[in-house]
Image 1: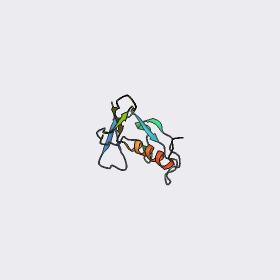
Image 2 (image 1 turned 90 degrees about the vertical axis):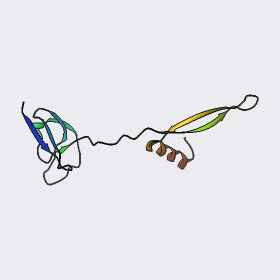
Image 3 (image 1 turned 45 degrees about the horizontal axis):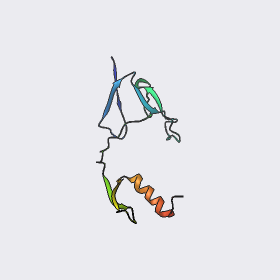
Image 4 (image 1 turned 180 degrees about the vertical axis):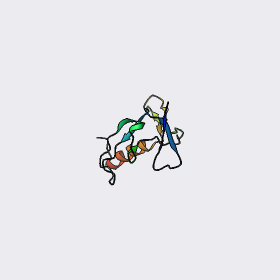
Length: 109
């Protein structure tokens, strides 16, 4: 089994060591002296990857603990006693973006 070493820009201390037929997700550079305008991803064997091609690599990210905040809402009125329910909502950027859209338009329509 033969291996190839691939050094990639942006993290010059690391070397990717894979077999020559190992598939890698890359974007072929259109011209050596220019950056691509389009970035169509294709799978290529490691042996076919050329210097200057864009290599898709995973970026390690810390996984934040999933947190939820809650509020208590009382349901019921009249002759029935109100029942308290805790409504939880996620502490994630996408949730707060949705709230921003809602409050800026003052409507969900």
